[in-house]
Amino acid sequence: MRYPKSERLCSQKQIAALCTTGDTLFHFPFKIFFSITAAENDKPSCQMAVNIPKHRFKRAVKRNLLKRRIREAFRRNKQIIYQPLEQQRRTACLFLHYISPETLDYASLETNLREALSKLADAVAKSGHHPTAATD
Image (tube, rainbow, N blue to C red; front, side):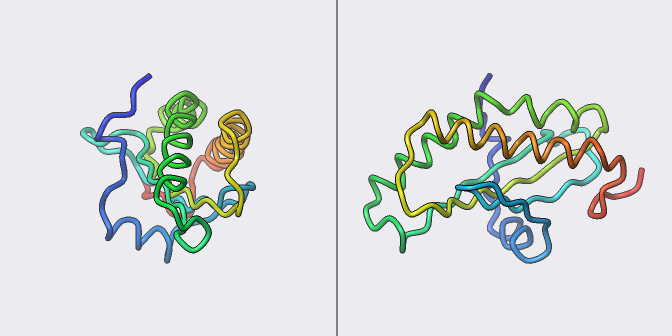
């Protein structure tokens, strides 16, 4: 599994739209802003961005460490969310906001991210037609 540039959510406009109009899911230590839409041919089925607040982690070294760990955990477990999205021909934009005041180790981050992705996948699978999804 890779984490190519096409799966990274880089647009400031998309991130701002996710935070204001997107749906939210909470699973400690993450608050996930997401939107699910109908898939287009050239788009990847999932784009993701990570935010580590500067007011909780003053040192950039800690913030970068957490971002690397979260991206690696996502890369290794993204098939959890990809399967229901591909089955329903949908695409997702995820914005992971880290809310814990502590630096968690990789194993606990991966476990928590896996559980959060499972919750998100269940929500996608249950709702064949998501409120923010465009009609086919």
